[in-house]
Image (cartoon, rainbow over all chains, first blue to last red; front, side):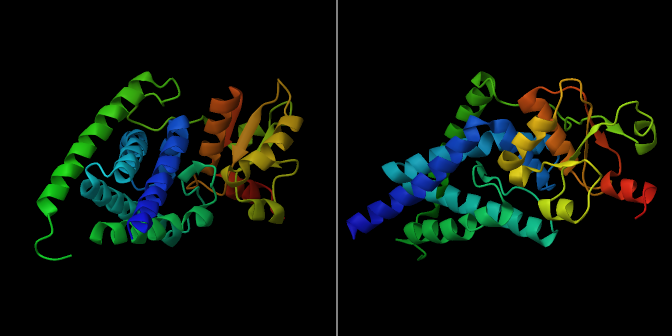
Length: 129
Length: 148
């Protein structure tokens, strides 16, 4: 059971660390991706575009290292919820935009969209264990 | 999750992590040369009306920023498809057509679409192109001026 839990933590943390690093390499692209959702004024899209990748990175590392683990899982769950809401609203409004989930490496909207519900389930199972 | 779940402790831990991420993001914003410049409003590429554009001595290089499916249905004659969803595949086609003195005009669906601004900004940012404009009203305006 310990090994399964460790693999789950490694997988969940790894997904967020990977997503964070891709966005940190080119933060302007991620700011553009957030802006295309047309949910926030540009200044807030810029602030979130700079802040969210670091939050993903810190959260992912904390989950793997079991450092402030429940707090990290709470944050990652919240992030999944926010991303899921943004994706659903973009889909609802018929926006033809990049998902932004994994920078431009997994760019097309529907392909990246699995991430939010999948990682939400993943994080919540670890959170409640 | 029972009533004894340590919500307060979890929230405290989350607050520490938020503080750490905020500090790192401020440092990253300050130190990363690729970080976007701070601004309150969105940077915009100059929009141009169709009528003055049609009086240009040389025809511009048209870039269609709509979806590939829309481009394949119909597009401005001579336009090249370049949208963010197929950027890597379409960029070589654009580079083959581009000349150093080309004037580029990017269009998307209508007045309310944003794809032309995104593509124009990306071309400016990544290829350092200056002679680039966005067609005001996009494909809708072109269609009204050139009915089938």
